[in-house]
Amino acid sequence: MKLKLVEDKQLEESLIDITYNRYDRRIQRIVDMVETNKVQLEGKMDSREYKVESFDIYYIESVDNTSFLYAESEVFENKEKLYALENRLKNTSFVRISKSTLLNMDYLKSVQPIKHYRLEANLKNKEKLIINRHYVKEVKQYLNI
Image (tube, one colour):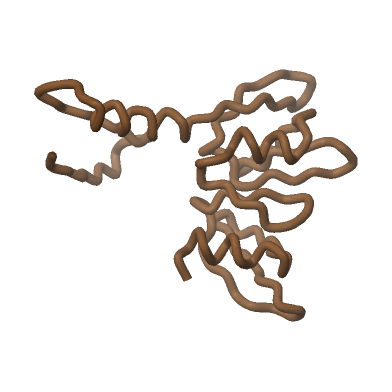
């Protein structure tokens, strides 16, 4: 099996193209991996219901039994509990960083240590989040540091 990666700046969305001579369990495993990382969440904004792709969400925050899905420039309301969302997003790039926040590690730009053994997460959209000291280990494991 050969792997070919092609960067195309003109694409608006990534495209995975699998070419095979025989569909076998290895190909099925690759397909399963790609499809399990595709999770749609329900979001509400301005009295309208939306299906939000998990890979478009920067982070999820829970406040007063309501979860908020933060995309690049929009915020959607979601009625699911944070632990339920965390279960749905298992095996994706989401990691819990505090009691009330899940972070999509794909949008993490950098981290830096701050007081009390915590980390400050700088996101690609210029937002900053605090990684609680109890969750630093999971973040470091994800980043292999």
